Length: 104
Image (tube, rainbow, N blue to C red; front, side):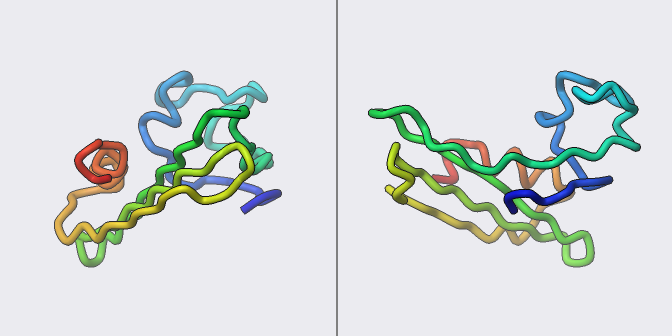
């Protein structure tokens, strides 16, 4: 959500890659205590497309889901896809599946 404050949420390995485990975010606070405000979605440059991908994981059922949205420079949806993942072991696996080209 735009303007949403995020704290302590699970982050994919790709989101944490620049900082590494226990690293600091751009505000130079330890990751566990850092909170930052999301700036929201930005339109891609003219003539380009923006692909947004996300995934979820339910540890109680061992299942997850993915979603992909492709938008143009006007913000209009060009294509979208979602997928139920009946058997995933963790959130990282759901994220990996979401970013694989075989999903969409």
